[in-house]
Structures are given as C-alpha cells and as structure tokens.
Length: 224
Image (tube, rainbow, N blue to C red; front, side, top):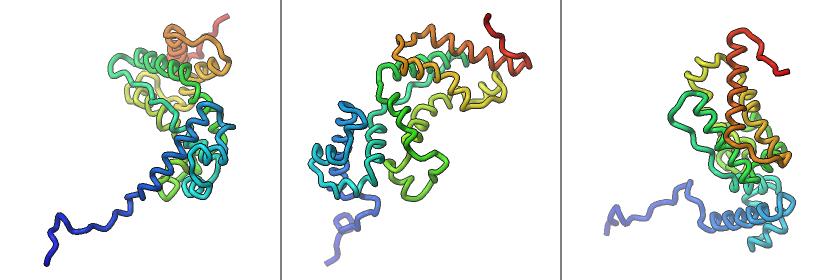
C-alpha cells in the first residue's frame, strides 16, 4: 500500500535541534542571566550555573566551551534593544535624537556599560570569520561584536549615509563614534548626573562644528 505524500515520514532537517538540547541551553542561559543580573560577572561560575539550572556540568560544556563564553552569552542576552533611528529631520536633529536615546539606555540599564568594560576579555573582531562553526554559534562570538551589531547599526543609518558624507566630508567613522558616545559612557562610569537632551545637543553641536571647520580647512576654535 502506498503512503500518502502528506503523511509520509520525513527525515529530520540537519538544522532542527534536539528539543532537549534547546531546553537545556535555555535553562543554562536563564540561570546565568539571573546570576549576572543579581551578582555580577563573578557570580556566573560553572558550579553556580549548573546548580541553579539543575543541569549537569557535562551538558553545560556541550553548549559553552568555558565560563568566559557563558558570561558573554549572558551579557548579550541582557542587552536592551538598540535605540530607534529618527526617520526625519536634518543631520543635527537625527544625531541629537539618537544620542539622547542612547544616553537614556546607558543610564537606565547599567548592564550594557558593564559589558562594554568587560568585553575586552573576548577575541578581537578581526579574529572572527564570517563562516564556519564560530559564526553559526552566537555564543562563540565576541561580546564586542554583539554590541557593534546592535548599537553601531543605529549610528550607521545616520552617519554612514551620502547625506552625512556630503555635509561632513571624509572622516574617521570610529573616531566620530568615540567623540559622540565617549562623554556619555564616561559620565556613567563616573556616576555623574545623567546627561539630558541639552547636554546631548551640545555634544552634537561641538562634533558638527569641528567637522565642518576641518572640512573648510580651518582648525576648530578653542574656548579660552
């Protein structure tokens, strides 16, 4: 008797994971994330995670090569979404809106800032390839890469555009991000009062003035 096509057994796709494996990884990440949020990176030990998750150590090592990789995955899980990118307005308006939103995220969610300080433990981006197992498993990627993908992408939509290049000329993109975000990160590290919109406007205005002065062949004016 022939088997109807819609009821014939199908071989499992190689991409389909064992549900038990999915559940055990989720339990491990739940435990690591809770420990990280309540006790910091030092609390995320192999012993503490396996005990909290009720998962064997051997199972943990099937998902994560070591404790550093586990902490990185937990950090990445706690990162809030990237700030929205304003769809309208000139370059100044869009940068002010984006920087104000980014400042609010950093001030209200200390975990990303902690991650920014901790991420130097991971490998450099240039050591990561675009294919192979390391790319297929997010936990093997550097936390630095996760941050770049999530937060830099918002600034790409404002700064890495023909309009921005036309107005600002050629500029060092990485340095521009440091100039804009550096004061916000330092402000949070120093536990100073949160930066408001007016402060973000000043940061953007100083950045734009310096870029326009350099493009016109004039050194930026200095106060004093």
